Image 1 (tube, rainbow, N blue to C red):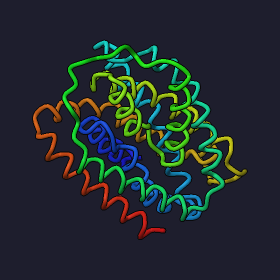
Image 2 (cartoon, rainbow, N blue to C red):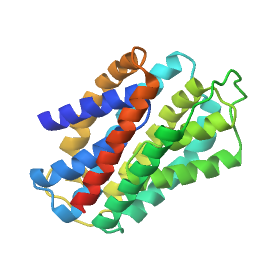
Image 3 (cartoon, rainbow, N blue to C red):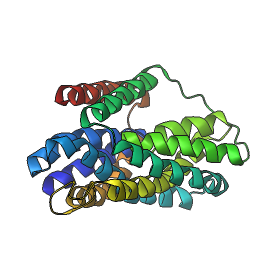
Image 4 (cartoon, rainbow, N blue to C red):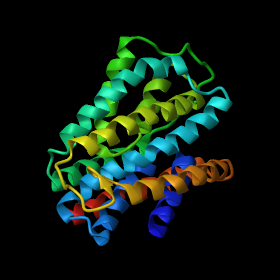
Length: 261
């Protein structure tokens, strides 16, 4: 439990510091840690994804609450995206449990490379405008895709939701706040899917389906309190430097997953 609390603190700080990346760190670390806790190697990647997504529910909820207090959650957009996010998260988790452990590792490692490249090459433009909250069936369809991919990769979807909303004219701070609220729906549907789609006896004791409860609870408890620390640190450190360092870290995360495949 102490290891899971430490991991949650690290992931929480990273999520608060950079806005994205906490889920990827969790998945890679849990994929390495869980076999040491008695989880079968062939189920470790599925358990890492499921436990990461379960922990994201509380972390995202705490972040969304803080953003809501500052008026930076576009609830109209959330309402349109949630049906798609729930459907996508459920279907994505149902697909993931049927994918071989090694293939999942390659998928997550590939996403790490994509996220690192985005951090190294992407430039967030100053966005003084703040268009009306995006609405409509298109947002529901986008939510379906974001939810499904997030379920397979084990993340809260911020690295996809935020760029989408900014491209549609939302101010970055409102895009981040709205993404946090969307992460709650992704985590709920995906974790429930991993719990219910898993074969009987997928994990030993202390698990519901593929969700390993000590990991999910420990990570969530620490990350909820650590994320605000990361947010405060972000205001005192160079954002561009942090992005470069974390991009390199994501490449190491991807490499570690491939070596473990």
